[in-house]
Image (tube, rainbow over all chains, first blue to last red; front, side, top):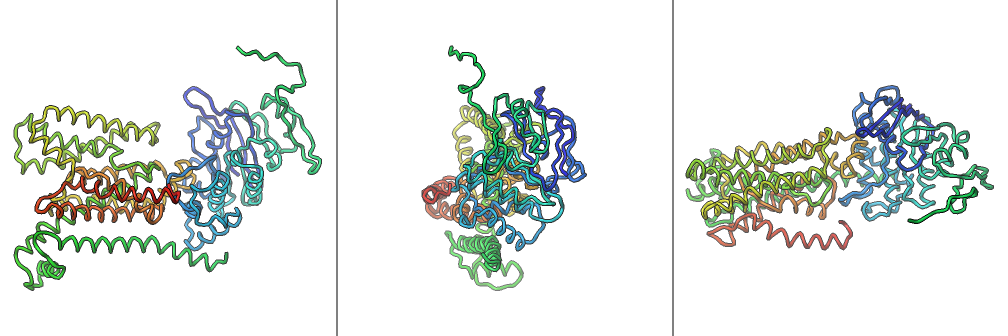
Length: 271
Length: 359
């Protein structure tokens, strides 16, 4: 289990995270949702030891993460960034290989793992291409392949994949391809945490939802229990409707534009 | 894809780094031998080997005393000196471009060159003004330590300014380097305003670089810092590949980013500080060599770092060969030649890379 216990973080006197507690279990897809500036990415950074906490602690599989160095941590969890731009021409294989650097496996084994993740992310036709020549969606697939290569080994286990808004640049085809691959990877050995902007995507893929607002976790629980009109409206300060998708039977959320608001509205004045 | 193809591909990839390094080393050796034979006194490869064998105690007199002196006291030390300086400039350029994730970086960016220039300037101008005329024989020995001290001090200040809450912030570091360099240049400019013609001439030639000063004694001083730094920097290649993705990505890939950053800045300052203090400022090698290697072979730092070390040495031998033959018996300043030779080739590579969408 990857666990953040009552963590707080602040920059100067500005509080960014307040008393957040979150547990990531293997075989579970957890999504963090919330408005812009709620502290979602910061929570992810805090969980991955990228920022210094004011108080609280992080434990990784029962051990304090502060007691582990970056190499030991990187064998347990892999992090996929929002954007990755590179100033030098690297091939996609060279990028993916970086995921194997923390491990002591032989070059032959590494090459086989790289081969497998290239297949899994359907990057076969991109072999030998330079990373810079790829589109945003293709770059994200290469990054996914890289972190897959990083968590490929059986031990130490369980492992965690942490994705920071992985779908923000992608069209619907690639959004589903990426999150689908992440879900396929889930096993008794692997849990996934993703910061997601799209509420419906979060509800479709996550087993467990965490609502954040103003640096606090306002609600968390099983998706089918917490994915409600009330929780979404209080978190986002915006009216929504919950509908049922006639084909899948899933609950979906529709936000209501301000000019179609059902309740009487104040007149908008322009200065 | 079947796995036997995979494995053969892997082997060929693994071979590439070793193969390219060996090939470049052989090329450098050939260039070294060729360069030894060129000059006012004729020397063939067999005569060179006879002289060396003679020194090792196998007497065979196939050469003249003049040839022996020219080889042992002039050409050999000069060329070894050139190789060491070129290695220092090439390897630190490659490592700094890697750590700053920026292809525009050259060793001067951390302030080391300007700091060293200020140190040299203090000896050439400052000391003579305060203490009185210093004999040239003493000046030769005062210049390197002052230049080295200036270079390391400037780097140290740059690093301190770039430090924030225990982390080195790259943008601030680069800006700090620019500021420290500007300050050093301002002090030099002020000095130039008051300098006499002789002092100006000495200083200007120092900034253009000089390899003719290579002696066994100087080689003895610079070999250990340069060779050791080069070997350590070569071992950082994997970390630099991860850092190319970004610092937090590298951290999540298990790299101790702060340690790597500090080590590389320190070793580069040491390397370049030592080199510049004895040879003067030789521009362009540190900037252009890593690019040539990347465009010609790969961006993989396991190739870029060792090949930049060897390539820097090769480029400097070529430039030195040109500098001392084209206007013989006189010599061109080496810094002028590196820029004049390197620029057209670099522009050619840029146009090729642009077309292939590599940068």
